Image (spheres, rainbow, N blue to C red):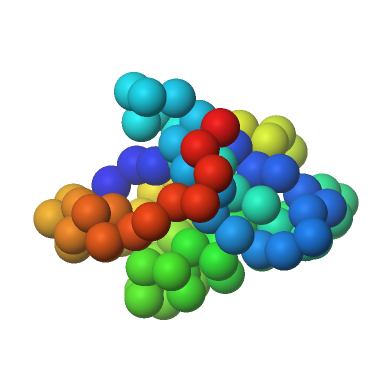
Length: 94
């Protein structure tokens, strides 16, 4: 399944922030890593893998490797993602 994310690098903590709009089109993430040499991309993959309880190899960047706005491909059933999403409490929607 595809997931659009907005990455905020150089943050004080690694965290899922919430959806960037009420339409739930893009998930905002904060990572402590710098946006250089792929460090932030690696941190995004590690954060989502931990949150979704899937292997890091199940997440790939399809578009936006050098952008804050990325399109990710997740090897996860949409039903499993929706169950996780229903249980997730975002602290701060942007």
